[in-house]
Length: 395
Ligand code: PMP
Image (cartoon, rainbow, N blue to C red; front, top):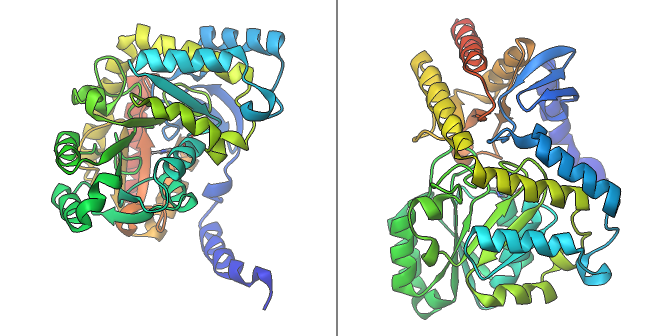
């Protein structure tokens, strides 16, 4: 028995996948052409799985802002804000975010993953409880693990199950942090926020909403599900990422609670990791401004989402329960999913291959994410390729 014994099942699973084509988890993007196109396997490929919801990765103003910051502030900060101090631009980005969300304070982390780690592990500690939706992202699960709270799952989007669990907690309900997502990353459905807020208020609990996939997507101002549902005052913490609608990397938390600022002294993912590069901060600030100034991008994103959802539904795919820019087709098996995904790549369409155990309810998914930058022609081509493979793999 060696340390490497445990990798044998992974090796076997990889071998099965490789027999059907290329390794989807080691895909190389040879050249990025635009927010919606890249060279993959020497073929011009439409990108339909990048979470580039507003298509801002090539926005000229954001690129110029990043370039300017590179020249004036250098390539990196070479340390954490606790040890090396904050650059003025980190503080400015936090001010921008707090203003955008009309919140008291904001904290920026180096990734969205770290934001969840940093917030969940410190807000809820020993003696406290975290009640999380079972379909939560891995970063939410990992954030719970890093802290000392008792962690309890409730059934995905099942409000009565949440209520039952809070009732069982008795007095501890007021020391409970409920965690949900604005748009769930796998199936694209929203949390039933008004019912969740009603319950959290009744039990005196706190609520975190991870708006990773809903920032820039939902709400008249693009602030996410809490804005769309007109419940911003009732959400205690909003967590999010810069790596989707804002086209860069990094994560954040905003809150109307002043205590958020104290996390800087105790949150390990904040303290023990290098702060964001100045160029990333600059492009993120610029993208946040573009997001606010250009509601037409959101309109286009929704038009495209409706188009792709309708197209795939017409072919006969089982999709997530509601239309959103995350559109996942459920397919019968892992093997079918891998074969289909290979067919898509060979035809110049990239989507996310999502397999159990990383998926809810053990589903095998071909997950598309729509961008405002997709053209109608690109969406029609994606549907055409899906239809061809659907027919081919039927027999
Ligand atoms: N939360 C959710 C819901 C996500 O889907 C993701 C990333 N897919 C993250 C957090 C982590 O964000 P990042 O990629 O910026 O680390």
